[in-house]
Length: 328
Image (cartoon, rainbow, N blue to C red; front, side, top):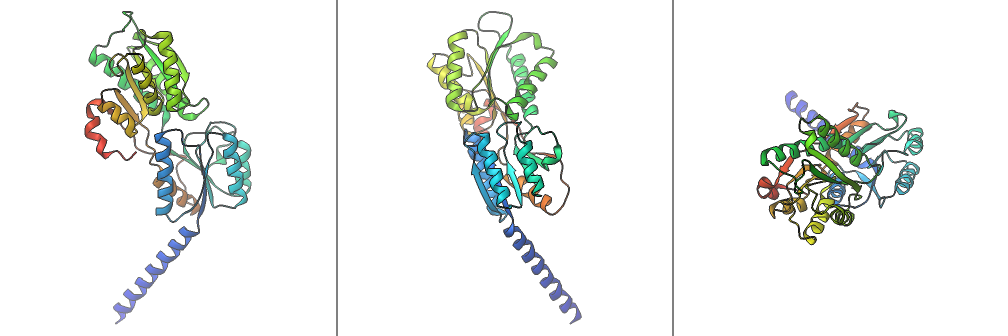
């Protein structure tokens, strides 16, 4: 009988603990400001955040900044006025956040960054960053490219002694664009083959398919028979560029080697169709890690300043095999 009473007491205690935990989770309100919906990647990121919030029983206050930093600042200020438990946001650009984050700190509301980095005068203005390592992504792009060139004995189309690279950059001032550019440049400079490359042109395509198409069209008009390689800071710009390459009567992935970053389904289909060569993954499925980390913060637990999701490199020869497993 004593054993039965002990087991019953333990069961009741477990049920009560679970009920308290669930109640606490349901009481949590988190404000989240997304930068917009500029790409397949961003849409997948948003959908994952919303789905993860539901799984974690979070009352999510979601705001779409429509690519404007001032909208994000307004949203964060609204979250502060609403006295949310935690604020999360994807910084459109790296700078200009000190004042609004000081307001959050004075209100004793912790801030958790997602996906992109930011630059502030005091690192204590935010608790941690969840997301991806854009610098390493840039290095992976060049390292794949260097190996591809070596393996395939790629020669310049114009008969010169250097392979000409054009670059479609992401949004000016964004940490993703800056990190990928620096990672690529540093890997190039460190390569024993650095002298065989020439960066012919580099211009922002603002992470959008339309702008990527427009800028690539301009590159082709200026350097049609000189371009050997395209590095796009995201897949959507690469997909736009493919349209311009084909419209000019050139063959994407053959006349011009194409490598980009993200790993969305669209670029996998392009690789399957023989129109792109490789993509370096930038994993948008960050919602689960975000809310797990948010709960730890709100419980007073210490978390690392940077928490990265896993990312791979995918090539055209494996695209058809991998495509069915892609979630975004």
